[in-house]
Length: 368
Image (cartoon, rainbow, N blue to C red; front, side, top):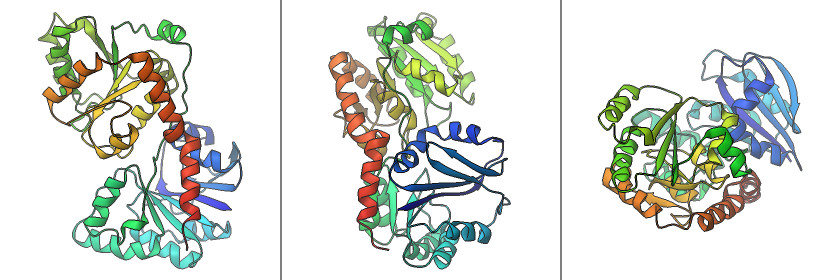
């Protein structure tokens, strides 16, 4: 079978194949697993033009319609030359392009759309999505509940087109914990890790407020924050400056290279997320691949990741009291036993191998 992974957007700032492959590491595992038995192409526009093979995936870096357009005819002709059986498109924001792709590829090719972080459209956007839906065989959502929102709002015609599949997984795995601790210096009893952008959706302020309350009861605990953006950093520092007695227990790490997260995930006992919305939850998935126990918001994608809370603790998003209670509940957990359960669940459900097996079953059940 021939699979083509297609991204319409041009992504500047990547001038070598490996730089892009490193960027998409949490997403590249499924194409790599598929390439073990099938032919896989990955089409992308970056600041490099050429062909490149990595782990048997045929990367095609092209310069076709780099300018933003809803009529990428040359890309579609390029896809057709590859004679695909299945085309997987990144994101639900390309309804006009998908209709054109269907016209060029014909009826037999299966077109599958992978949801990222888009929300259902209204008005004319909903109408265009509904028309485009006739050209699409299946939609992949991290949680079926997220897909149901698109179907109930009229953007997708039928619920049977919606399939549950994680869009990301992890390149990390457990390593010797003492070796990891020697690199990170993590020493909380227990230790908690928070990773994300400092923005309102990730809600780091609520994480810190709840943790400050938690420290009044459990002063040996520590929270480490890793972040890429500084939007809310002044407000965070103001909170910490007002709590000098607990300041040393909340450590602002800042930016960490992605490959070094391996050691942080293998050092911390728990991974905290205060997100209000996530299309998948890459950081949580990566943490779980190393045995980190999730203490995360009760949102659709996180319910799926944790098997409805069986492999972690879920709490209501945006509620400081709920996170405070969840943190207290984490003290009652047998950490070693729960780490083993988390790893078992990850390997069976969230690993690239598990995701690929599920994806193949979805494809086999489709008729073009």
